[in-house]
Image (cartoon, rainbow, N blue to C red):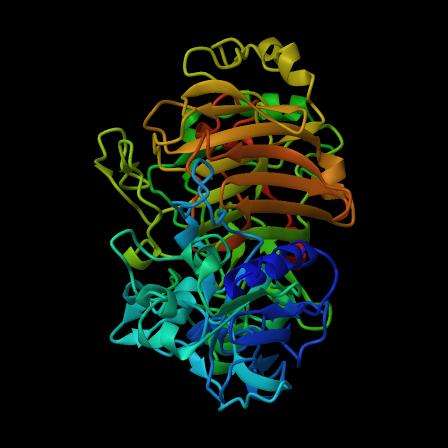
Length: 640
């Protein structure tokens, strides 16, 4: 029995699909009814296996471009394949290249019906030619001479590859609002004949990925690998075995930009330092800017009027207890945490050491301050393993006394705007506002998202409104010195030398996950159990806590902190090196809504009001003001 060209294509293509998962970089031949395609190479001008690091200059206005002219000549990948015309006459052929991020995607096929596209596969980051209206490109006329002829073209990976209007502003395509993702990219070549184009056998919304059908966008990788395009007549599909790996690595030594909209009380020039400011070079190239905290005026503290170098002085729990009892109410200092009044006073970028230094400045009598300090990245991204190598300030001294600082590494929404809305929440909606309270309205989508490491001295387990730890507060008689130095409960002393690594996802109380809960409940991952806590069904965040050695995290020369943000899960890891990290928190889309919008990374040293952390052994109010600067250093950030 003679096989039709369609079955010949299928027989040859199936083994190729298995081979493509291996290490080969050269695609095998694919035979169609009127032609044969071989040797598809999506990037002849980029070395196989070499990591492409995102190019930061100009990305703040244009979004990341892969590659740029600084990385390859001309700023485009050169793709190539060879085509043999096996028809009876010379003819033109039509071809198109598609790319897709493979590291952070939803599967193309629905799990229950593999003939259908997964309902979220359209969210994957995929694209083709930069101008979506350019559909299939034409080859020159290929003679029917039984020889292979080279076909070449160029392309690049850019933001907003579907040319969606939601990312436009004032008729301009703000490609930075949907930046390319980090991780591995794969490439798909589709070659076909003129009749499939002219007769629209290939649908419009596959030829032009920016067009929607009634069901939404069609992922071309689903269409050609698993859907109707898999069996199209006179069509060859090659999924290249070659992957491109993309990593982001902003240089901490490339400067700190000062946003003119930042909430500084004084923009005077004296505060500017080298490598920090608002000049055009920093605007183009700096990967970080100074972060200015919003200070909630309702979070006032009544602080003891004591200044101490807790980390280096011999400050003990007895000192803490005595100072807590000694001062009368009218002697306490009523303050909120503060922020730097002028830019560049407390953050420094070192171009030689390629690091950023943070300084929480010391306090003086009469000039009381507990000042928050930090930096924030400037280029939004969706998903990725965000790994920071830092030496942040140690939190406990040799007597396990806390200095009042919280070291935080956290992702936050790039914008609370329509273009950066999260996926719709179909069950009850999200709480509309971060500060909305219990009576806040519910809406189907929001722009707010946040994923946190917050590391401080607090209880390492789930607290309760009803029964936080019971502390002996001493006698009400201030003159009874014998009752000043009260002991802590044994449950607190068991973790005396440890600080708490709190891992939080702000899901804005979307009830859609199948195992959404309030209260305290177990989440299991990799033979570990993490106890997740949510105060009530309208509380906007889910938190897990793990006790860790303060000396291990902050007395060592450096430590790594990683937020592994995937489409269906978040994993928090820490460790002394990248290859020796352990998991300290885990959530997935069964228990919480995983954000899918664009976020920025913040690294801070801040003075939290401990009223936020019910059950904490030490109160911020009773912790002395800093006598010396608290210094933290950021050596490296990779997103991969």
